[in-house]
Image (cartoon, rainbow, N blue to C red; front, side, top):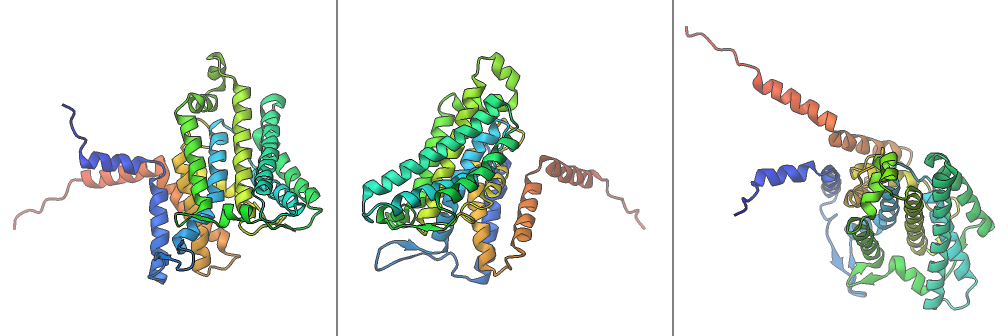
Length: 356
């Protein structure tokens, strides 16, 4: 017979999960908002549409594009690289889709919406492949190669839109970000399905292990017969594709692409989400679930900053404080230091008092 694991052991296993403190941080931020407004977490069903509305739904909708770029970034970081171009790829995907729909006459055509999505994802995949080729074939450092695409991508978006913010009208395309299914936002459901598909692909096949292998020890991976170039290109193409999906989400919500603001600094949020989720920037092991938790935390933090009325000039500092505290809580060295001090305190002998 198999012995049941003690409850305390199960609890300790949960606490040791790299994304545990991310979940705690989300709950704390929600608690802060509840203190200010006790009805913050309340959900209601709209009588007109039958859709669920509330602050939690807004957070999930805002988390969808961050989830996409975070999962793509997670795969790239696992190879020992970095992708600074995801924000620019987002704006390129948005620019392509808006220009495509702008030139279509029918604002209700499902085919036009599918064409815009397909073209945007194709361009995003090509830009991701360029990143992969620069890193794996040319031999540039990932930081430099993706920085090049980061600068060139936003310039490409300005060329596509002639430097102007471009708007379009298509009900099917708008539904991607603003529609509902079974009362829940389509954009979040699509993001969850994509994350599940990526997770199954990398964890139910050898792909995930090979990506981790080239991140841990490229030489050993090469000796084991792993195609490093092919895997690097695959990882960067996946990152580009997911950034393209995020660009579609961000653009479809307002049916406008802002060449200066769409995807702006989202690569930093993606990196933070990956780190919060427990993926090491040194490469090797990666955690997709942790990256999703990190993305939801970033979205919750952004909404909390706005809800609390924090000045826009102080917003980066507010976010930095929360992220630094969270990373310290995750640090093995900090935990070991606290455990050591606690063990020293508990082992210190107490002074005996002599009887009078």
